[in-house]
Image 1 (spheres, rainbow, N blue to C red):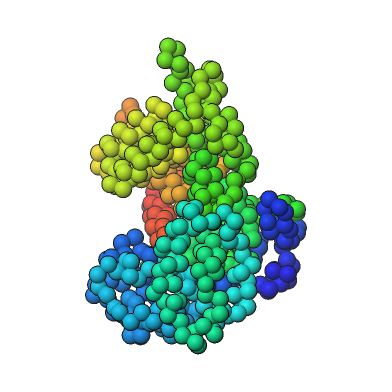
Image 2: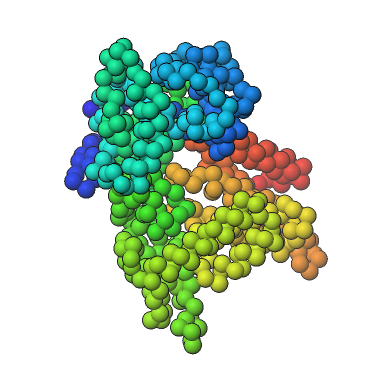
Length: 523
């Protein structure tokens, strides 16, 4: 039924349900990469707050960042806008419907604006107003999972929603509803707002805009897809549609072969987090414990992304690797694969958390090569070379090696080539269809290309020139890398980051082709 609603005549999926999963999708036939699963318009969408809301807020009409202290305000409700002529201010899908509600609070302030103008509450308000603007979508919204059984008073999720959304909307706006608004929006209690907050937290998808702001959107069909840490679909959003009603329309496509009867999956966590971090995030935000193939495998599909080195028993050194004995048990001990030493989960979690803070701090400071190398050396004492904290450091280093004056030697290029290949192998294993890590893989292939081309131009270590065969071999590999870098981004062109990265890599490819032509090299 859902496929027909989206205009798909050959429905590629069936909707099933179970006690564990609720509703989910399975393939109605064999599906191949590129096959369309579904496409649909959002029920509702709204902006998230910007990182520094005291300085900058999204326009409530078009979501462009505006300076809060000097920017214009909506003439009716006083909320920050890019211009009084912004078309979104008069569009019911954007600001028009909520403006009537927001104008119930007449004051306009310049102090403590992040608390006064809470953009993170707008999605819940827009959901509530569907009763007036789109009753059919209101019905669809209420069919979505809210997990209210887990969001009871006293839980962190309930208390946060109550403080930052429910009380804010009730005290400032909803309690001031007059007869007409009460009639247009008959359900406006604290209970229904908490239910909406549950629906948003469980189902909302992030939409990144070209101007740097982010939205959250709710999609009634897409939300049925279950999570997997190795998803077989990728979704994208329409940002500049021919039909304005199609703005932020989602398209879900298959990225790896899916046989008939298999589950169609997406991912609600970060593909480069370790198993414990992913599962905790899913428990906290989506209220389920993931048991997918990757989570069930202590080696994470042979990538060792969470593995730690064994340091022995204090008397005898050991070069073994520590894995959780049961990765689906958060309290499981970590055991060495070579000796009898075990480490408690609490010790592992504390160590990984401390290391994560160090990595985050270095990355936030824009880590220099010496700083990154020093941290890599320290963490490598405890972590497997493929650990996700190590991956993060190496991903930064490969973008510095071969690009800064002091790090152009063949030694650094060799180090860069090895790091790139190692990280590419991990990335391909974890995300073979480029569903989640396409930008990471594209950057790695681009850096690999750069290192190979530079190597082809350098003399051998003994000072002799490279043979034509050696040069050609390096450039053939470089060509493969740059083509893969571009191919990885084919489904990311609606995203700002994807479009910018594609332009950079396309320029590199043209320079490479020009170089090969000048050297009369047929690659």
